[in-house]
Image 1 (cartoon, rainbow, N blue to C red):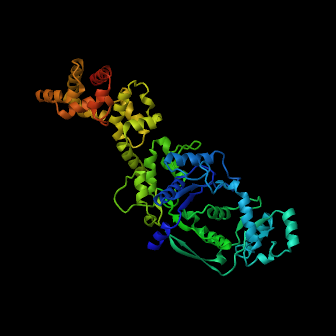
Image 2 (cartoon, rainbow, N blue to C red):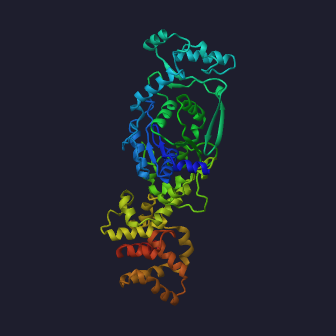
Image 3 (cartoon, one colour):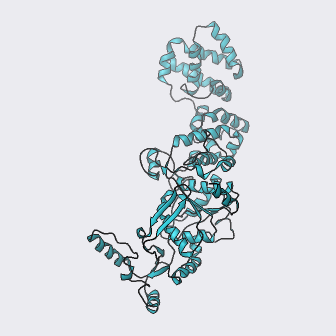
Amino acid sequence: MILSLLKNLFMSIRVRFAPSPTGALHIGGLRTALFNYLYAKKHNGKFILRIEDTDQRRKIHGAEDYIIVSLKWLGVEQDEGPKKKGAFGPYRQSERKEIYEREVTKLIKAGKAYYAFESDERLAELRKEYEKKGQSFKYCSLNRNDLLNSLNLSEEETKKRIKEDNYVVRLRIESGITITVEDRIRGEIKVNSDEIDDKILIKADGMPTYHFANVVDDHHMKISHVIRGEEWLPSLPLHRMIYDAFDWKVPQFMHLPLILKPKGKGKLSKRDGDQLGFPVYPLKWDSNIGFKERGFLPEALLNYISLLGWNPGTEKEIFELEELIRLFDVGKIQKGGARFDFNKARWINHKFIERSESKSVLERFPAFFSIMSIVKSEKSKLAIYELLKERLFLLEDFKSEASLLFNDPKKYDEKVIKKIKNSRPEKALNFFIELIEKNIPTANWKQKLQTWNEKTNIPFGVIMQSLRLAIVGNLSGPDIFSVCGLLKKEVTLRRLKKLINYLNN
């Protein structure tokens, strides 16, 4: 551990987040980006965004912009990337084809890679033949001498086939080698090279595979640490072999734990969100509502995501970004999966809503407060929000919470009416009507009520329940005197009289 820290002092920390633009950015991708960002900022390093778009068939229009906007909304700003040029671009793999061609040529000349000319149909036949024998076909050192590739052809025949036939370029993996890789979260990993086939480096369309482009880009962009999801752990030995084939320095690897379903086994998926009613994307994507549209503050979502697989070793759970950067320690990243808990995410969002400056929230997220459009005074809007903010877990809750100020109750809680109807609630309601007609400020109602209550035998609880029932229709909600203070006198009067009529009828 001490040696690792000393190494970091004398090296430039460069990390990257490298998503594919094949759809919306999942919460797992957000977590990977955040951990890379925190690590870079903790060590005064650089956070690079690289778009891995080598699979042109799966590329979806708008996905790259969605990724960039999502990270910006979350507060994870790129130091280098498609929208912030640096010295190691281009930052889209589709624009780096010449680099891959140059590098794979080096491997071919060194005998570390070769051209393979089998068609997809021929490979499918070979798989069937092996299956009949109860075996699994693998293009490797055991059979490549019997297959159609440049290792078995003359230079002249190879050149001719390159011009006339489709081909791929494969990595030449030697048999019987023990591949050893160190992962800072998982420890040492050892794999025998016989378990790995001669992986394709350049596809038939001339584009590199993920594995090849990934290693070449990390080398050329001087990436010092690769922090990525656990799903890439099986690829680690292969990536190590590509580094070794070039005789390049290997970066430090860290594979993050999976984000698991709220219940049961398996990785969190979009289907889980659909079934259980929570988002898995940061922003709206097609018909899928994101965390932003549900009313998450980006700083709250960032806080929650940081705790998926990591904790600072204390009971504290609420952190600002600067504090997360200061505390972040990869030694405290867990190996086991992190279970997603939407209620915990809502609770953290609730805490951020409580502590955030009210005026700032109203200005930053105006779409959630459209119900107050009829309120002319900014001071009144602020007062309404201040009254309700402690009840909000998501900003989308504001509309339903604030409706009591803008709409008369459509119905009354019959259980409450049954409970109070024999305790003369009409008399209590008429007392409040009298206060309003005498222009007594709501700030003085409680004192007046205590004096009046001493002269009557109506329980104090019945009086308060009667008032709340008249104003909001049930016993839930914020301080009822504060609510009355925000309502116009005529509205409060109308609601009080409506309940009296309801009780009498």
